[in-house]
Amino acid sequence: MTASETVPVARQALMRRTGPLAAAVAGRTVIVFGVGALGGAMALLLARSGIERLILVDGDRIRPGNAVRHVGDIGHTGRLKTSVLFLKIIYHTPNVYVEEHLATWDPERLRAYVARADVVVDATAEQPFSLLLNDICVAAGRPLVQVETARRAAFGRVRVIRPGRDACLLCYEAHAQSTRYPIVPPGDEGEFFDDGCGVPTVEAPAVDVEATANWATRAVLWLLQDRLGPRNHLLVVNEEVAGVSGDLAVVGVHWDVFAPVTGCECCHGKLVTAPPVTTEETVA
Ligand SMILES: [Zn+2]
Image (cartoon, rainbow, N blue to C red; front, side, top):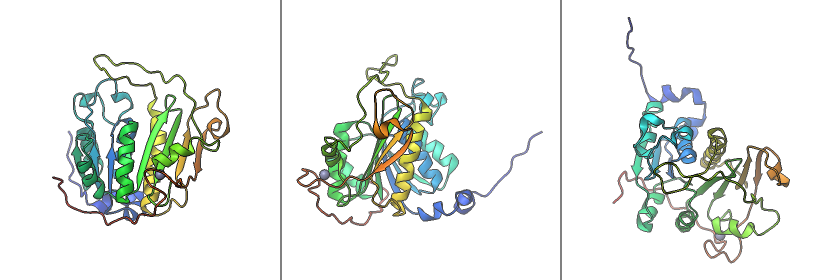
């Protein structure tokens, strides 16, 4: 015989085990562009860390092939990844407000989303979109955390852009011409096509993707608590790969600091003061 139990689910009781973290980030809003293996893991971790409002933007769906490294599972096959995240989040933290949107390149919509977030996360791994979002975040004075993996997720990279303080994405590209910047040499990414899918994907074990997601989430949480300090570039090395040197050859995490570049076409090294976050719950 089994019996059901009714339990209280007040935020304070649910978040008690997070210690002071949930209180420190209470009331904050994070928008995540791209909720695949990387951004999806981040969104769930952010909710479980105490972030109270999440805006999720992605038009992709769970397929049997991508479930192996996604927080969604094959039982969610065919569902939008944003909807799967909504379910995962409310079963962990029912007090979190979650908003779902399909991917968009419309600058007006993007500006409206960004204005409502304390921190913007870009986990799309789509460079032209990342550059567009970089422009919008710099103009809006909104912090952006861009995250990606390379070489079967043996490496992860997190770039933090606090407009007027850190290098912007274009500045980081300029820094990539210098010897100090850790460049992951191109190599076999294990690229392949899933059955019935016209877009190639790459091999990358969940354990390595989630290691980068974990550190990128940590960067967001530190940003929100103003604990990041000057650090703005993070290289995560999960696996040893032949043919690399310097930090790339040392398993672990490596923080660095890269300044805005004078003459950058996007940020101009100009100081931008962030306007207050708008709080409307709907966007036209
Ligand atoms: Zn710049």
